[in-house]
Image (tube, rainbow, N blue to C red; front, side, top):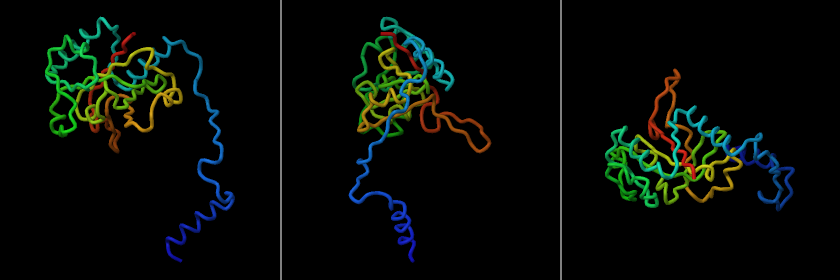
Length: 214
């Protein structure tokens, strides 16, 4: 008996109790798992997001709409950023007080060109408080996935409370599986076999998050 025949025989045995003609979508799937864990106010959920972001070594700031341009300008200046990647739908007012050269999000940009940019500023789609996770879906204020994976510094603006959810099950209905989703929990990092942490391996070394009160 060949290896192929062995594998197919095992598959047939595993499917012995499945009625003929039944498709993968036919059996009802129970989705009665908890979507909300515990009881929190909106303010407590936002505070939990800030706490878990910081736990993942992201730098968290808070601002209102009036103070946002000055805060972004200050953070980029402190970083020494001169060039900033800008998604096509980013609010132009966010960079109004930043002394930088905006770099457009272009399909033809090479990895080398993106790596030469100092910072990238984006919005986000959803922020999950329980896991300290930011989700980007390549929306107009977020741009292509690669612009947040190559530059060394990512400054992400989260509108609170509208874009903040408590748990992952609460966040999933807000996202489309047809869009390129990037899930970010802190700066890019990995550890070798001796558990030495290295940051910036497959994404930015520095993640700064601004919680924008609307």
